[in-house]
Image (cartoon, rainbow, N blue to C red):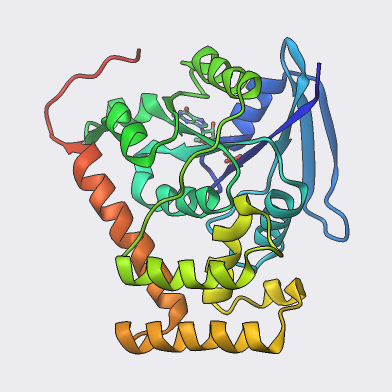
Length: 271
Ligand code: BGO
């Protein structure tokens, strides 16, 4: 069978380590990421040795401000794993989804694992309509409790299903004016970037992210892109970085309004 790599990504304290240990058991390889003292762990999925689980450092964003962010984005963009399992703390769904959107922008097929289901049920603050969330984001969503070992089989099944039949999922669609700027940037880089990563590079160029400096654009391409960004910044009366941040927050707000049911009195099953 063909080997396949599944990256495990999520915010710090989302339960990534607990889930990693459950998925891989005692068969783990532990080292450091090159050049930094950030721990690098990988292991094989229990009973499925062809599937390698690559743990990524816990981080809140894919900008390039910390070693954890750089490691995570370089791995997803350069090493291109076959899938991402995105672990989320379901009791902090809004903040955790902010990272999910960025992961979706990399073009790597993703599965959302809403962790801490036990805590969510106990807290009785809100419940999450996972079917709706899955429908709206257009990606598989599985509710789990890594601590209580709930629904781990369901998650594993979804990973294996995606391995057998590789998926691509659409990225989140933002404000129309931002989308038109991004598609114009995509036109500029179409041909030098593979189709599944066009979105990622368009957003990074739009954000004037320095880490895409290696793209070797012609002077004309760079001028066109600068003009697109300038126009958008005038239109939004904001800097391009903030335009993207706000677009993500608006998107999450809409999703939350539709999928999160706030109530002080409800019961929810663990299944
Ligand atoms: C401590 N449910 C609950 N309730 N807790 C969970 C779950 C879950 O499904 N999954 C993980 N946790 P990591 P990162 C702790 O360590 O896996 C808990 O950073 C404590 N420790 O047990 O480390 C997990 O790798 C003392 O909690 O996350 C851990 O992503 C008191 O979430 C924490 C209380 O999990 C982070 C908790 C000494």
